[in-house]
Amino acid sequence: MIDGFKRALALGAATVALAGGAAFSSVGVASATPSHHGDHSATKHVDRGRCHIVRGHWVRVWHPAWRDRHGHRHPGHWMRTWHRGHLVCHRH
Image (tube, rainbow, N blue to C red; front, side, top):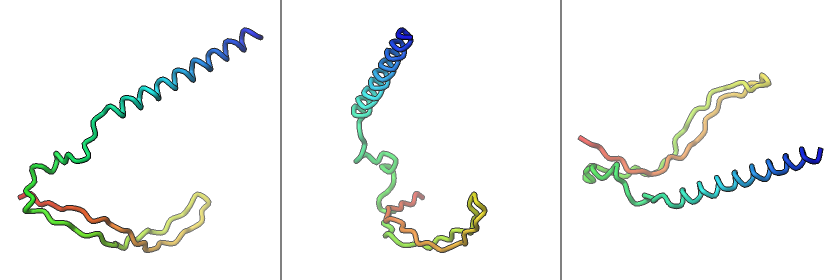
C-alpha cells in the first residue's frame, strides 16, 4: 500500500516536472523567434501608386432565423458590423 502511494507520488511529481519543462522551453523558443512587425514582404512588390485607403464603415448584416438545441426558434435580425479602414492595392 505504501509502495503504491510512493510510486503514484513520484509519477505525479515527474509529470509536473516534465510539463513545466515543456512549457518553459516553449516560452524560450517563442521569445527567441524574430518578430516581423514592420516587414510587409508580401506587399513590397506592389506599386504604391495604385493603392488607396478605404475608410472604416458600418455594414448591415442579416442573421437568419435559427432553432437552438431545445427547439426554441430565434427570429432573424439585422446587425450592424464595423469594418476597419484598410489599404487596398490593385495589381495590373
